Length: 151
Image (tube, rainbow, N blue to C red; front, side):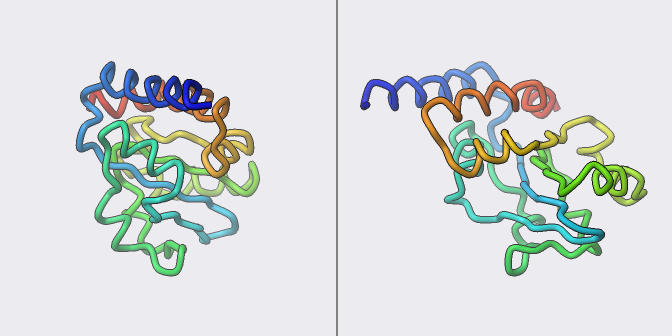
């Protein structure tokens, strides 16, 4: 078991080494579950946050300050503007609705294509880590993390 854990940890470290531009870049994670309703995770002990921190990233201060009771008010959509946004949607219709919102569309993270759109599989991998799920999630995130690192 220790060997498998060490291998996953080495994989995370290797990605951080390959993408040194991630150091001190910011991240945020949210789930758009209803019209104008964001569930937001500012818990730094959450698996996804810990993975991103191990890559050298830090949670966006504006995001941390805007989250109240694991929610983000739609008036604070600007708090999602960071270097890497991990964003899930309750349905394709909600995704289309948010994409049509000019406040969301105007965020630099959106314009620069640094939003990872989480599906059920990637959300599960981020919420319930396993030795197979973490490397898979990193593979899914990598194209967006590369854009964030190059910023």
